[in-house]
Amino acid sequence: MQISAELAESPVYDPDGGLHTLAEVWRDGPALLTFLRHYG
Amino acid sequence: MAQLRRHHHEIKSYGARLVLVGNGSVAQAAWFKNDQSVEEPIYTDPTLKVYERAHFRRDLGGLLAPQGILHAARALGRGHMQSGVKGDALQLGGTLLVDRGGELLWRHASETAGDHPSWSEVEAALKLLRPA
Image (tube, rainbow over all chains, first blue to last red; front, side, top):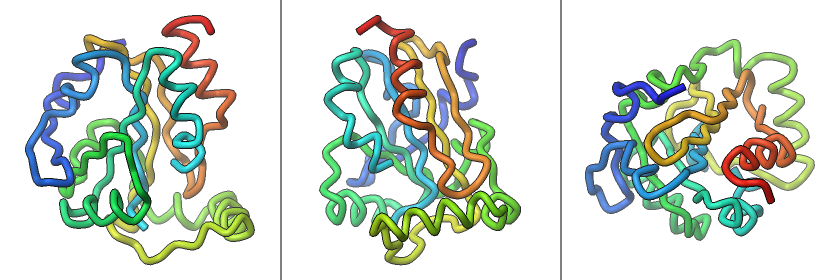
């Protein structure tokens, strides 16, 4: 199953405030993405 | 999350990299990265849209379910003390294994707070990438 385009294109920020799309995470290879409940 | 970080090198040996996604502000993500000495890539979405689009649960039931309370008690017993919620208190998390090109190989969505996949479940999924 393919990740939906809507999810792949979702904007996310790195801790320096840089804007990315989620798809950048798996562009260079497989990724195990852990979605945290919250920080702390 | 802490459990997966302990298996960082094994995850890498399967050709994957561990990536953390959170839901607080950029400042909270930066705080977390420093406070927890996070070396893995970390991203945040304060709008929660990535969680919604990944169909991860967000409701009070997931937090108040008996299983969630048990998970919290076990975590406390292991010395994992929350230092205050930084992010969305109702949001539950999950884990996705995505191959290069965007193929979803495996998915775990938390049904309650503290409902994380076991390492053996994660490793079985990683074997879809390359047998050990």
